[in-house]
Amino acid sequence: MMEQGRNIIKVEAMVKAPQVSSSVCAADKYLLSLRSKSSRTTMASLLSWVAKAIGVSKYQKDAYKFFDWSTLEREHVYRLVEVRREQNASPATINAMLAAL
Image 1 (cartoon, rainbow, N blue to C red):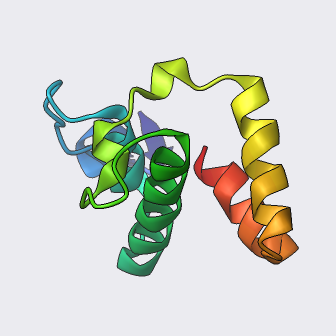
Image 2: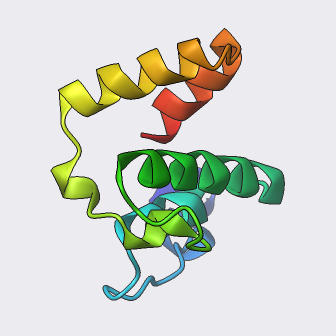
């Protein structure tokens, strides 16, 4: 609780997180945590690129939903950064990908 003068405000009642089903994949939970639609779109695109680079079909829409993120290892991340550098991706793009991961 937070006291403000003589009025007591319950912070818990002011801020309620939306309930997310356990059937929602971890990546979707992360995307739902982002504030803006453009951020969600950007990060979903980066996550899908990663999923496709690691083995999800390149024709799969929302490929990030079909990748088991618990299998991602440090070596994969190093290789993904290397691939993006070979593709002449900007440092900002590489950093955004790392932030998404």
